[in-house]
Image (cartoon, rainbow, N blue to C red; front, side, top):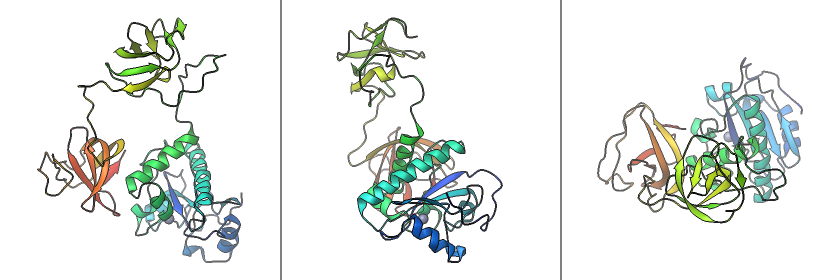
Length: 331
Ligand SMILES: [Zn+2]
């Protein structure tokens, strides 16, 4: 790695707090080697990021501990790392490969600086200043700020190693890893036994006799094999796959046209009017979202020029004008 600058935009004196993944707006020829020579022959005040990720490798223009002029936002320039995904006007396959390298780099940086990958850690450049950056990622991954940030988080997590401990596959088992472990299982959910069940919830008495069978969750406890399936035995989330959610439970259905995204919106300092029957300014007014109030939501949709979230308590809440900064933060 080459570093061309050393604190020209300021020395931060602390670890970076967020990461901005940019699109360079450059042609297929705007590779890492190009940026290296370009940056070294131009005024850095024209702008530069910490990293340039391209087909020919990754070029680091500035050390992580220093600031960079990459997002036209004083806090962002000072405290956030900037990664340029290069060749964003070139072919889609090259751009996507560059993106993946950038996500891998972002995962490494998250680990290094103890940043837990979440939408709060990956602001988009367009949220920080007036720009269409990251234009290509935006077009490819949902055409909405929430969707693109969510995609970034999901992709970075892939490299971060999001699933921690608790794999239940035992030595000698040739079973492929369960790619759809049971998340947030509820009593009554119909599940398929993907791998093993245990005689007790702490993990004694492993048996694969019920592998492939379907049954219902009867109890959930706080141990590692937390789900009791029928009266057969206890399972770790990795041992099960969801077939059908329990009906009549507390699970709320997402209205038509909404993209699934379960997260929390934290309102800014202005109250927001909510709607109870549809994502529309003409909808029936519901309980207002107070300044700084948190609300859990299940999905989002663009309607009437706003991005709306649909909350767990069945309210439709606009959270931003499309293309503009959100009126709060997402967690
Ligand atoms: Zn940018």
